Length: 258
Image (cartoon, rainbow, N blue to C red; front, side, top):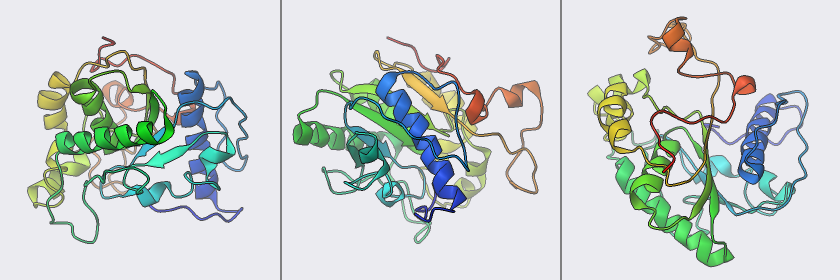
């Protein structure tokens, strides 16, 4: 979901992203991860009870536009009876700044600054809809922003569930080089494994009663396909991420249920 997916029936990216979001919204709606996940070519069809508004949080070098296929009257969320809001879409106050490809050396917000903006947006959604809680579906770095909000800024229970899609909770080796070159800072600085392990995951540990769900893809260990890949096919490497179809709701060692 780095670019807006085409709506063409034959587009594999559309079908795959629909499958991923279908799983995420099923988790958000029911708290249960389906035992079977359909990827392309089979489109998932879900018919579940309406739940809280879904707040969609983008990741690094992205914007609310990546969620365009999922919000609005003709979006995917509406088709399953959910109301969708993407942070930065203008439906509520608040625009995240996690960098962009057009001005790579421009300064980004910190995780903490973006978390405060997320809180502002959630307040706006709750005021607009009258909902007591929202569900959050966050992609990549957006999951770290949501974790920070839930731990440090959520004064009362406003989040029903958090679903993280490919969030680098242990950091990303791909962040080290751009951080050293001054690209996308401070966001890339805060995505380094050293920062996540030594700072973020030691200070952002409280879920405040919010269930967390993590969905991730298969790790790329081939340096030809991913030049920043350092993780090899070892036991410790395999523990970092799990294929989507084997993911299960689990407690995370970097987040307590208090």
